[in-house]
Image (cartoon, rainbow, N blue to C red):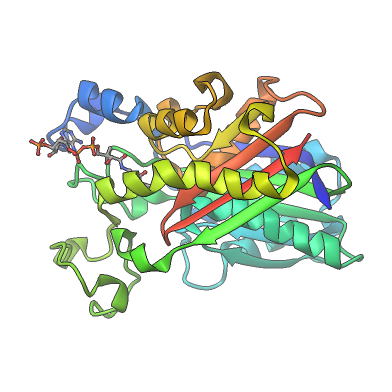
Length: 328
Ligand code: UT7
């Protein structure tokens, strides 16, 4: 069983932080950031919590879908930067939307979160005949977890949210959800009151203590090595189930982390960069929100036509990777 996308929406906070702005905070420059990552600027939230950005994105998506909030059966939130340990971001948004007939929960698969959540929602639609519509909302306030004195991370990330309303359909669909927790220690952020001897961290000493205790840590090189393989691997796993080749995909909407990662992944897939939809220059890496933001923009720019085959594909902390191949 496949899915039909009925509506999408996004919320991007107003404040723009350029590479030049960051060069006033850390020893970096526009040339280095642009050439190593492809990122020129990112948006940073002001007062807006993650749930608020997610709510605004969801309201737009629901309006475009032309459905009533009471008709929604599932609300899944994807975030690694919720404002609360509990309740889930999805619970807050469900209440604000008035989607009171929906079950709601958050799913944390980091930057692969949206792909994980769409596929999870599809399983609800397939197995529960009382559930007609699902809303998937990815919202990230990464500026709250990034250390703005760490040039290894602060240049990469941005804030933003996007949402998608789906229903089931009999169109082409295949998915892959993957995880390798043995390398979880290359990308993480500690919770409040965490025990620093937690197993993930046992084999390295990053110096992230004191004020930086809860900041996002990453070993960029290791994540990079994983990413360039994970994107083609995740596509391949979903593709082999339906016997489809990369050339048959009209548009890839990948996780927006680094232009060089996308170039290498495209090469490994044997497709040209024209088939990779790229928005990272304007938004940086917004973790779980990056794929749905790109999807919303691709639809707005008429980059996707009816019957096109698209691939949503991501990778991230966990380390996770995931893909969905679907027909529009
Ligand atoms: O959602 C998943 C999240 N994470 C990712 O996708 C990250 C994946 N990794 C990457 O994108 C890249 O590894 C980075 C962009 C993080 C780093 O690029 P790189 O080409 O791997 O650079 P590097 O870490 O090898 O650093 C090269 C040089 C070093 O200097 P030396 O040792 O050659 O003198 C760094 O100290 O660049 C230096 N450097 C910087 N210079 C200016 C590192 N960060 C910066 C910076 N500005 N921001």
